[in-house]
Length: 225
Image (tube, rainbow, N blue to C red):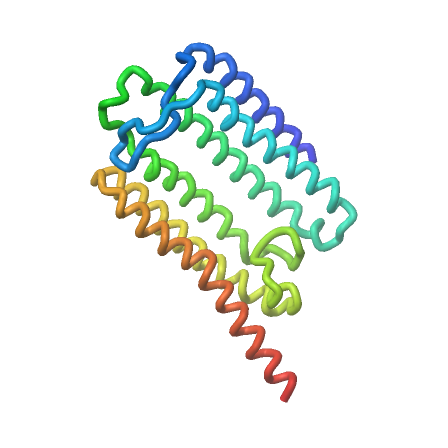
C-alpha cells in the first residue's frame, strides 16, 4: 500500500502541473491528430486535465483493490509482482497524459503534419507489455490478475502452463507492437503500426486463451476416460 500511496502522490502532482500548464493554452486546443499527423479535432483545454486525472483514478482503483484483497491468501501471493506491474502501468498512463499536452501545443500550426501519435503510443505500450509478460510465469492462480478464463481458474496446472506460454508470447507480442510503432514513425506509414498491433494482440490474447482451452479439455478428457 505504501507504493500505491507514492504512485498516487506522483499522479496528483502530475495533475497539478497539468493544471498550471493548461492556462498557458488557448480555450480551444487540438485534441486529436489523424493518421497523417494533421490536427482534425478541437476541444476545450480542460481535456488535458481529464487525461491527467486518469492515472489518479487508476491509482485509487488499485488502492481499493488492495483493500478488498488484503485478507485473500491467493491475492497476497502476488503482491511483489503486482507492485512492479502497478508501477509500470501508472508510468505508462503518465506518458499518455503528456502526449495529450503535445497535441494541445499544436494550436498555432494545425495545417502542418506533426508527429504520428498512434506509433508513438505503441512504443511505450509495447515496452509495458514486454515488462508485464516477463512476470506472467510467476503469477499465482487468482481471480484478479492474469489470464482469468474459466479453464485456467478451474485447473491450477492449466493456469501455470498457460501463463508460462503467455509470458513468451506476450514478450513476442510486445516486441511486435514496439517494432510496429518504431517502423511507422520512421516510415510515416501507419499500416506498420496497425498491422503489427493486430499481430501483437493475437499473440498476447488469442493464442494463450486457445491454448488454455485445448489444454484443459485434453487434461479432463483423459480424466473422464
